[in-house]
Image 1 (cartoon, one colour):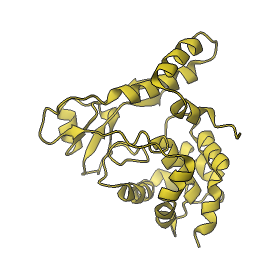
Image 2 (cartoon, one colour; image 1 turned 30 degrees about the horizontal axis):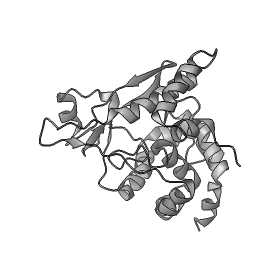
Image 3 (cartoon, rainbow, N blue to C red; image 1 turned 90 degrees about the vertical axis):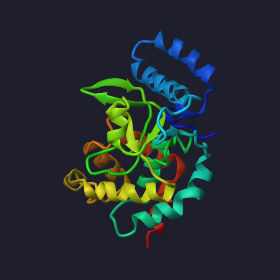
Length: 240
């Protein structure tokens, strides 16, 4: 059996009870801070969505998404991914790997945001607030979200949501895939950092991390592992 990447395994393999037990045993080991952080993040994700009633009519709870196997994930999203990459100097293998990683193979999707794109200046659409782990000044921190959808970021902040927990909301997955391309193109740092000049998927993964797409220092390595383990590079040959 092919060995799965440990980062992905943490999110997929265990029940909540097993994760809690693993957290205790892992915490006793030296040099295990990174794994403990990942387990804690998963537990926050699982426990964050509560069965409560929104306090404002413009908000609603975020529904849990469906986890797919890698084969199902590829079948469901490869065509839209390839279409969004044509003529854009983006490798479909990299886009799909980002999609799989950021969404936990579809399991952690909230608001149809498959790429973990945060609310940013210029975004006028709906936003969702959910728990996230960020590495700030080399320190891993957990920011707890509200689990709600808001009409815009102004409403979210006024309701007490932490700005670090605000992500873009999409009406459907196709909009998410298309906006991911637009998001990269609209930020000059991705041009300056060599994302669109990358000659290989691996180089593009490195460029995305270098440009700050994610705060996790292992981001590029995990993307490359997903591409390799699941043979995503086959999609790159279908661009023409």
